[in-house]
Amino acid sequence: MIALSGIISNLRARLDTRAALTTLVLLHSAVTCLSLIRVATFQSYIHFSGERVWLAVVVAAAFSVVSLLFAAARFSFGYFVGFYFYTMILGFLWIDVFSEYSYPQMLAGFSAGLSLVLVLLPMLFVRAPFRQLVALSNARFEHLLTLILAISIGTIAIASTYNFRLVAIANIYDYRGEIAFPGPVRYLIGWVSSTLLPFAFACYWLLGHRWRAVLVVILLLFFYPITLTKFTFFTPAWLFALAVLSRFAPARTSVILSIFIPMLIGLIGNVATGASLNGIVGRYFDLVNIRMIATTSSALDIYNDFFASHPLTHFCQISLLKTVMPCAYQDQLSVVMQETYGFGMINASLFATEGVASVGLYFAPLTALAAGFILALGNRASAELPRRFVLISSGTLPHVLLNTPLSVAMVTHGAALLFLLWYVTPRGIFDADRKP
Image (tube, rainbow, N blue to C red; front, side, top):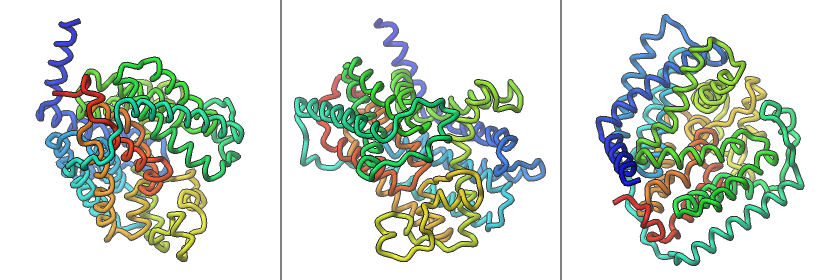
């Protein structure tokens, strides 16, 4: 046991060097672009041309310099989300070179690249901890975790009265349009599935209460037949994977590997089995390489095209603001995109919604900078907590932020609530797991 612990410690130290991280992020950038070449053979809205590949390679290589920030910066919540943002924007810059839409592509690429740099500056480097004016004792914190379980069970019970179907994941779209929850129930579902239960899972797992962690996983599984979303279906496995990965790799390396390894597996499997989305390998490639990664990048491509010839929202897509200001769009933007392009309900990140859709290409970098400072509040709230705990407890939020506006992530999915939970968490409760 002592020898194994020494091997793991040595491995973690080697993986956390600047040289190792630099190599890994550059490999990740290359795999992201190669994956998009394969994705283009399946998705009609993503294009690839051998005639312009040289330009795409130059753009991607130049932009990959930004990835070196992740070899230098320390781990934080912003580091976790920021690396996923980097992957999405790199993918958009690659897609932008080949795009057949009629928006100003050079301006859009420059705006997206600058937006990423500006959002990363506070997310990576604003880490000063808040003064903890309210701190729970260890005993009261345990009561808080019990309360989270009670709220989760109550939410599942109430939400199940509105919808509970055991449906194969391939058939969820046949039924999801029929699901409607009252506003309070919809918010509870988002808070519990995206924030409260992942937070409880991280606490129980790192405190050694494995059976309670298993109970959390079981509760998370109940949200799939309630919501019929891939997000809720894969959340339990995702959290467990982060827990295992972070046991053997340090936090920064775990962040990079958490997206690099799944994408690399999908790319190798697709190349080995041929151009098909059938079978287990094909469905994996569709889920990970296409839907989880490429779709988030292509959403920026589509939003750029739409708002190049349609009125900006000036943030009226936010429900609260829509009630007090005129808005050119009565439906949600995802519905508008579905009706315009027919590719499905295209939700998009803050770069597309609070950026391109709200203020246009010239001012989008400023909204990204503001968003970076908002997300950096998570860094400050969690600054004195163990890295592994921050990583696992926030495990769902990078995916949420890739696919939803910042306002939705903060309120509907409970990112602001997670910041509050981090703030009141007693700093000594994880001392046994804290990295020296």
